[in-house]
Image 1 (cartoon, rainbow, N blue to C red):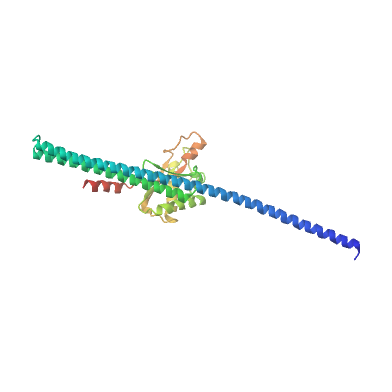
Image 2: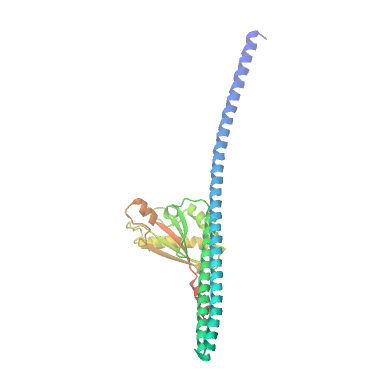
Amino acid sequence: MRPQSIIASLFFSIFLFSCVSTKKYKQSQADYAALQVKHSQLEGDLSNCNNEKANLARQKSELENDKANLNGRIADMNRQMDFLKENNTTVLKQLQDLSVITSSQAESIKKSLDNLGVKDAYIMDLQSAMARKDSLNMALVMNLKGAIGNMNDKDINIKVDKGVVYIDISDKMLFRTGKYEVTPQAKEVLGKVAMVLKNQPGIEFMVEGHTDNVPYHSGVLLDNWDLSVKRATAVVRILQNQYGLDPAKMAAAGRGEYNPLMDNSSDENRAVNRRTRIVILPLLDQFFKLLESKKA
C-alpha cells in the first residue's frame, strides 16, 4: 500500500473517532442536565413533604396541649364541686344542730344544692362534648390536608370556622369560564376529598356554588343563581356516581353572587368569590339527643 493511502486512512479514522466522542460527550451532557433537573424536583418535593410533616406535627402537639389543658380544667372543677358538696353538707348540719333551720328546711336546701351540682355536671358534659367535636373537626381538617397534599392555597382552602369545616375550591380549578362541566384536574381533587369523607360515614355535607356579580345568561341558564346551582349539582353528581358517596348525606345549593368573600371591585376579588364550597354540616340531631339524655 502506498504511503499516501496509509496516511489518508489514518486521518479518516481519527476524524471518525473524534465525531463519535463528541456525540457521546454531548449526550452525556444532556443526560447530566436532565438528572440535575430531576434532582432539583425531588429536593423540592422532599422539602414540601418535610414542611407538611412539620405542620401536622405542630397541629398534633397543639391538640394534645389543648386536651391536657381541658382535662386539667375538668379535674379542677370536679375537685371544686367535691369540696363545695362536702362544705355545704357540713354547714347544713351545723345550722340544723343550732336549730337555725328545721330538718325539712335543711333537706329542701340540700336538694336545691344537689340540683345545682347536677346542672354544673351537665354543663361540664356539654363543654366536654363540644371539645370532642372540635377535636374531631381538627382531625378531619388534618386528614383532608394530608390527602390533598401541597396545593396552592389560592386554589383550595380548608378551614374550621365557628365549629364548622369548610372546603373552598376555586372555579379556576373546577370549571372553565361560564361553564359547569367539571374539569379533569378537578375530578382528581374531588376524588381525594371523597376518600376522606367516605371514611366518615356519619358525616353530612352541603356543596354550595358561588359566583361573582358579573351578569350571566347562557341558554336555559338565566342568571348567576342558575349557574351556581348547576355547578353545585355537577360536583354532587361526581361525588355520588364516580366516588360512591351516599347521596342521602349530600345536599346541593346555589348561593349566586350574594355571599361574597370580598367585594367585587376588582378582577382578583371576583376570582376569589367564584368558588365552590363544601360545608361539613354539624350533627345537630346527635347534639339534641345528648341534651335529651342529660335532661332525663
